[in-house]
Image 1 (cartoon, helix red, strand yellow):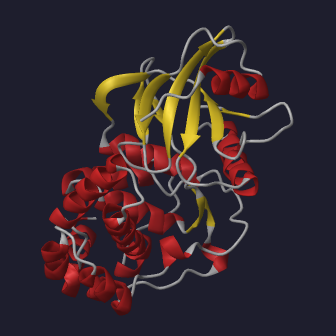
Image 2: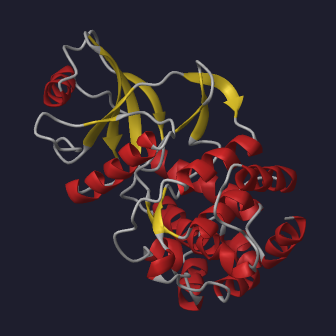
Amino acid sequence: MREPSGELMRAVAQAYGLGEPLGPPVYAARGELGRIWRLDTGRGSWAVKELLVPAEEAGARKDAEFQLAARKAGVRLPRPVMTADGDVLFDGGWRVYEWVDLADGDVVTGAELGIVTAGLHGVGHPAGGPADPWFSEPVGRSGWEALAAAGGEWAPALERALPDLLALDALVTPPGRESLTTCHRDVNVENVRRAADGGVVVLDWENCGQARPAWELAKILVELSPADAVTAYRAYRAAGGPATVAEPVDFSMAIAEQGHLLEFYARRALSPAESEENRARARARLSTMLDRPLTPARIDALLAAL
């Protein structure tokens, strides 16, 4: 991992009007879509995001609009910063947010996740288009068979999971456009964090887009322990969350995303064009996901608990 040059950071600071950098950027974190660098300037501290996946200005403007609408509705998040020309992206590969100090090692509770999600679903930001296939369409039998044939150290675990994965695909039903709104689509304990000054803050908005609130809620619940899922659901409903999770079809988004993530990580782990850092992260993610995959039995158990 190479630190961005001082010249590049000065260019970013100038484009966004951040002030003169007081020193080199400090690495803070990374996800699948980018690395976060903290940049301190004469005007304050900023989260400079180095994009690892290509982005377009039109898409970035849409997610920034949703972020601003969510802030106005009372959801706490780092304010997105625009360039002097009103753009979200700089040079196609950088964007900037205000810096928020987070509490170290303090994981939010299921109840807090439920309350935050209710707030997000209360924004009511227009969807602006059909559902993304990544979140609404299954991998399908041919896709699973190709993935299993590609090999890799995870292939035996994938083979064992195939009957359940194929059964899950049969549950996925594309949503009607009238049921969609703009959702965060990546709410979890990594992206909802406790702020150092108290309360919670929602991070990583670049995945936001069209979804059914009930499907996003179901996806959030399956990533929690059974007890935390029940707590989160009750807190969501008590906070005025509009969605209900009541039948297997409500897990369509969770099923579709699980499949596409397994495809994505397997291809990245096998690609010689990827960095060793990316391949290692992909192998670790595959191991974690296949160790406890979403299955029809888990869906039935969660519905019974709810």
